[in-house]
Image (cartoon, rainbow, N blue to C red; front, side, top):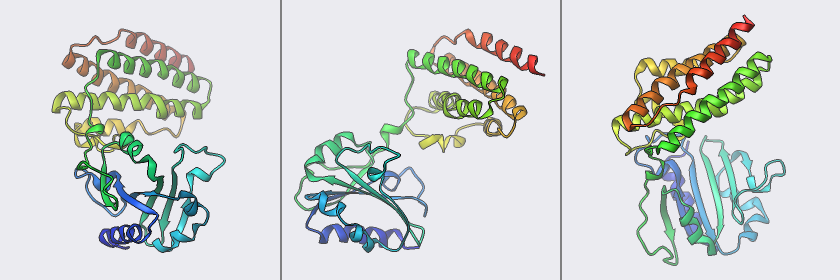
Length: 284
């Protein structure tokens, strides 16, 4: 596998030697000092170009980056509509295991790019001194944020309401429906609440990572193991147990957040729990 230095030298040299590229930036985890470096990190690169059509017209220019095993051009797909406007991206996986996410951006959209930035940006090359102020990568946008009373209540409301869809799916023997609602909506709100409790205990000055991937660092080992058990979903018995376990965890963490912030914990927890137990018992 090519080293980080080899990859970065290649990417910057290519930009430096192509007159159409006026500005190059690095984004994502490689700019974040709080993320442990490893070989699986993508190289998230943006080139700001004067003639984007000349790049899109022929893919031969990307051969310089190495032998690849996979190429995806998200803005050139029919099943998944483009979302980047005038920007165009190339996702490349190389034979040596490196992955490059390369985005071409029209040079006249520099201001728009920085306005939309999440803060994790480093300027690699600026041929025309377009960037007047120093750019320092910062993950502040991803720090745990103290919830307002309304946000806290909304999270509780969404968790308990959507849990009834899980119940309905299990009662109807529609396990994929139930799994989707637990995975896509209910558990993410449980994780949101757990992160809020972490913040209330340890301060709102750090991130628990994308998809809460670092939250285990801040949870009691017992709670982490209990949370992992809710991902057992390979049958109806397991799904029911996962749902009830999510209930217990959500109740524990949301009540803790409510106490910490002086918010009111909703009383519909008890009603929804009784409803769930009633449906469950009627099926057994």
